[in-house]
Image (tube, rainbow, N blue to C red; front, side, top):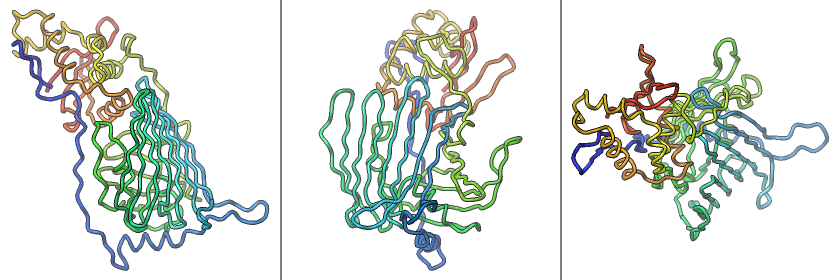
Length: 414
């Protein structure tokens, strides 16, 4: 993010946040009898049929799990999922569901998933839906041979767009979803091992937060079982069982209970972000209100981020202490002293508004979550908080300091 020029034509060569594609390295699938794909097939073949037992008191196959969503020590929502036996076309199947409610940054988004999985966890059909105050996206999924047929319905505000039909290649045995992964890990051997699972291209049908559909995943899901481990930090440490899961550019840790393999936590590692932690351990929920004075540096950052992404001039103006920014820019030589602070403010605000994508609140929050999660934060001796964002999210440096008890941006560096 460059400083505004004193000339009439103001230029900022970098936008505040850019959602970059994370580079991934293609792997060749090992199809040998001892390879990770073959090892995964053996685990899948060992999964018992999802059939309700006859008689009273016998355990029903499956599980349920509730967790907190956590982001940088703050509780950001709730998560719950389940797997239970069902029937599809006369065959026993796994009926799985997920419910993700993200409440952070002043807005809320809900994602709901229900899937039919074959005994070996292959995706048969399902539904995915994301809703927010700005609208909704719904996917109807159906496996037909080596294709995944998807009907996508989008509602923007009160406008319902014409449904789209997508026809995507879907490899044999393709699976998808966190519940499928948890079912796989519940039946994997205890010892360390590496597995690979072919992914169903569901995410290729999900509109991304920057408005571009991602390419279908070509790499297998890589599951590296580490085995026995300790989860948590003192004094809350417990015996656990760990697997590291890589899906495209994403890597995360999936933690299960040491006994019984009940789900325990799922930690986003690369890139960091929202994680699932045991219920009650997600920290405190923090209320953010862009119309109120910022009582923390993070509140000032979100006020600015929402103002930028949603083109709200009042939030941009309120998030910055303009005299401090003026002094910093004059000292660095990027703004002439003879030009008043009012002109600097006008130049910055006009350029921010011109660059704004006018994003829905849910999309803006998703970008801001990732920006915070991947940034480096430090505190200077005078109490200033310096936040250096990752190059994938702008590569800018923000300086925050309280002025008369209210936090503001006091300096910006590209």
